[in-house]
Amino acid sequence: MSYCLVCDQEIIPEVDWNTMFKLTSNTSLCEPCRKNFHPLNGKRCSICSREWKESICPDCIRWENDPNWKGILTQNTSLYAYNEALQEVIARWKYRGDYILMRAFESEWKTQFNQTFDQIKDLTVLPIPLSEERLLERKFNQSDALITLLPVTTQRVLKRINSEKQSKKSRQERMTMKNPFQLMTPIHTPVLLVDDIYTTGSTLRHAARLLKESGCPKVYAMTLAR
Image (tube, rainbow, N blue to C red; front, side, top):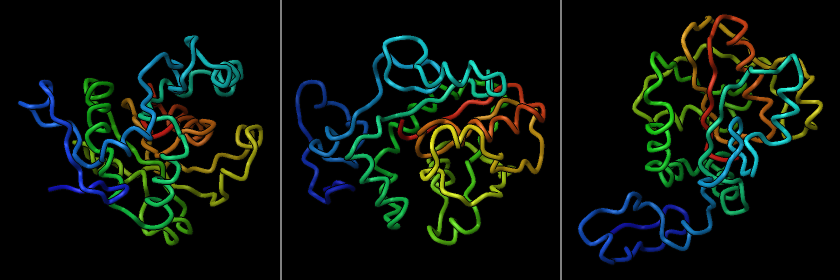
């Protein structure tokens, strides 16, 4: 017997000819809760993973048209659209300490990594760091937590030196602000940055810029939500 990590209701598997002889891919969510989330499976921006009918969305066109940011982030891949249901789950997990909730997405998270990044040679996986102040508040870094779900080891060569909340800044302010990160050790292999949410892309691009300027050939990102 198993219970949904989101609503705590007993999970009663749907049985049909497709599921009778195999386990479902994820038994951490009941079907009603699963249907509240919106997987990003259709046509998407090739850079940021936003659902978009063209190859590149307007946001990424603006980033790429800026000579200071062109080519900094090779590709972000996100699992879900950041809708109301996912926003509530992430808030419970990240801000209210319901740590086990990340297990609700473990199967899909691993599958996404294996399908998209597992074949990249010498890939280095890095978490987006929190400031010491934020880490003290939350007791854990959500990016580190997501990496523990993957079959990889990680390094912590990025340090956050600015604790200002990005959510309080406009898009233009995020693009033009001083880089909030410091790179402790250069990395000369491809890098995968891991974070929970891609909002404007500024956090990932600031980290990617430091890495690229220090000799990293390509910087990718993987996030839970877009």
